[in-house]
Image (tube, rainbow, N blue to C red; front, side, top):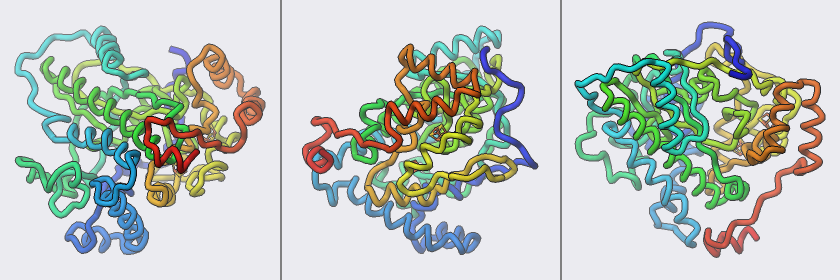
Length: 404
Ligand code: SF4
Ligand code: SF4
């Protein structure tokens, strides 16, 4: 396979420390002030209390809007149409479940081919299978829904759904699967280029919903074959999707914090299924993204919240890589009342998969000396600065008027 290498392009500089999902900004913004979970978390991380309160304020205002309490225009309802669908796929018996007692005998190479074809039939545009490194499994559960006293449950669920009261914030996460199937689902460039808007939020949610359904379906299939499998998607992760996907060769981690692939650039969302189904695995790839991002900086220059580093990599839990400031990013989303994807849009790799753009990507991968010129050419052709696209008419009159 082209561009495959023995080691992933992130640099391991010490023992990798597993990540606690409770440290994720999305977990922290949903903590109910004064709840036992919030008090416990901030007793361990007192310096985060102030910023988390700001994140939570944004979250609460956003939730009010999505329940319709403050809805002002049809476009305000768009994100709920897709994001709520993801939540309903997050229940424990959707992402996991009983395994058929009748085990089908499989040959790993042939089975890997079948699984990849099935994943594509379910909507994935890129699929890769890698080993599951236990270092990428979260230590403890921290993100919604399903917890008592957790304000992220509504509007997706009215309290904790019947039968799921046994899941607790902070529960240890244990997954002993050997393999991970990583899947990439593209976002519509036309809609995502309206970012930040209700329309781009809708599109992000639409792709997350499609990827969640595909991962749940693929997990169901594997368990019906007689092997354990667990889907991982936006509303119920057990593993860090980006390094898992890097290990499988789906792409590389870019400066913007997203996975970058040769085919889709940064304009896609990930989902994954971990399993013990015997599968032939693939190797990581070196597309030259580390060198390209070193020279490029376009996402960092266009990020409205200055969340993307303009300087070098840092060591994060044993791995040297670029690290975005997730708090700044999320606060910007809150200020806009919409998800931002400007960094995904402006990235020179995020181009439609025409023959021309595929050839340019191939050039960027194979000829390091051409990269500076390609970066410059991207600015000449598409502009150095982000130009927000107009919102399509169907997305709602008020948003159209406000942004036209
Ligand atoms: S999503 Fe927007 S705010 Fe966040 S890092 Fe990307 S460009 Fe910056
Ligand atoms: S915009 Fe440039 S620096 Fe940012 S992720 Fe894309 S290639 Fe890397």
